[in-house]
Amino acid sequence: MKFQYLFLCLFPILLSAQNPLEQGSTLPLFVVNTNGSEIPNEPKIEAHLGIIHTPNEINLLTDPNNVYDGRIGIEIRGNGTVNFPKVSYLFETQLENGENNNVSLLDFPKENDWVLYGPYIDKTLLRNILTYDLARDMGYYASQIQPCELVLNGEYLGVYIFMEKIKRDKDRVNLRKFDDAEMAPSEGGFLFKIDSWWNESIGWQSATYMVGNQERKWNYHHLYPKVNQITEPQKSYIKDVVDNFESKLFSLQESGNSEVYDLIDVENFADYFIINEFTKNPDAYRLSTYMYKDAEEVDGRLKLGPVWDYNFGLGNYWGTQFIYDGWVYDNNWWEFPHQIPFWWTVLLDDPYFYNIVKDRWAFWRSSLIDCNNFTNQIDTWESILDPASDRNFTKWPILELPIVDWYVGETYAEELDYLSNWICQRILWMDEELDYIDTAVPPILNADEYTVYPNPTTDHLIIQSPDTFPSYPHTIRLFDLNKVLRWEQTITPRLAQTKINLSLPDLESGLFILEMSNLKNRSRWKIVVK
Image (cartoon, rainbow, N blue to C red; front, side):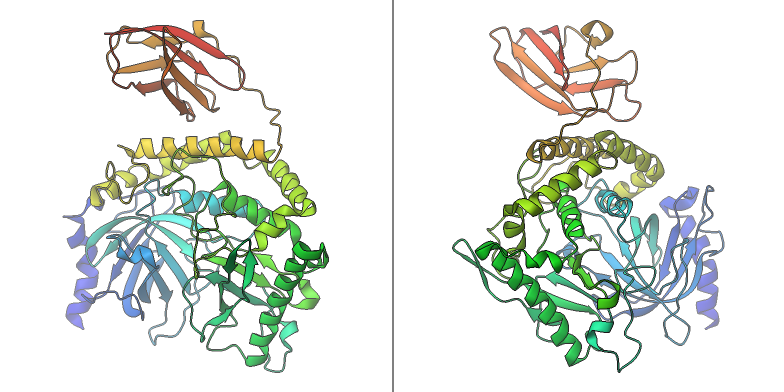
């Protein structure tokens, strides 16, 4: 015990001499010690957690654990992502006797269940952050987030995102609690989700429905009440509620019976649809799709959310890189148990619901869902994560490397530029599909105000602005003298950007026309390629 205590005291000091965090970090530091035990997928094992954070100061591993200093239970979390080198973790703050310890960490409301999400396939580190922030700004509960840096058993593991685990709680999914065994099922709230993996002990399966020539069904998981606590009457009640909703929705398709709209929060369904389609989330509606229903006397309608798991969204998936069009809800190639419920096909075919979606899109477009807004957010997060992002990609040198088969940027800045541009282009496509007219007018482009160099050039060009570029999509094209398009790229300048750097394709020597355009007009320059 004395040796263990001495090790815990000297651990940060020993670590600092060989760790990238020797100079400290402005992010919170999470230091986990399992005493040499490997963390399994499940169950949780005992460990010690120290959290070091003083806002607006450099946090050092030699500083005291001033946020948390105590016992936790920890395990690996995730499905497919557990096979990547950088994994995520679930942990539970515990008392020394192993019981739950409800605490406030980094100003999050008191609880005992937490997530350390390790972004690996999302090289921007931001896709979940941006989506959760959007949902929260729209007035819905979404897991609070805080980037941090993790050290596990003396090894630096890079940037992680500290998050709340989704569960029923007055400060999370605020549903009426079943605190009396005599309560009727209709008097309490339910939290559940659609997901692919399933067995009879954790939930139920939907009925089978026909969509075109395809049979579809999906799996539901009980989350609250917990699987080991839910009663048979409660199971039957929530299954009947959902079955009734799906039956009424199917009758909307068959007979036009609109009674289903009395069973759901229609604006909530429309907003959930907008978030998932805006992000073009390939897992939408079929995986990690959370739902809840409160007590009848509170609000007995079915609602969707909280949002969860968008690391494949926002252009980070095969078939979506540089592809900004297309709906996710009609992706009917998935086979059971990964199928998308028929709901969205029926709802989007109904003019009533479709017009609500259009109205909600117009409402959010006038405030939150804006190209400039997201570009500025990305710039802000980039400054917050600097230089932690450099340390992360030194630990995990995956920039320039294809993890699977989608977009690969050479630098972290290129990954952020790609994300920013993808978002702006996706917004434009959804504007067109949902008949939204953006009244914001981009500035007129005047060729005389810009400097283009080097000219002549061989393989690159720089467009220099006398001021900062506006954060509107700029399409840049190169034509030969026969007006044949030889190259094209769309760029959304970031906050305070004064130069656009262009890498040109292999071209023969000669004279070309460079064109830069936005939604308002265009400018052209003559370019000589040596």
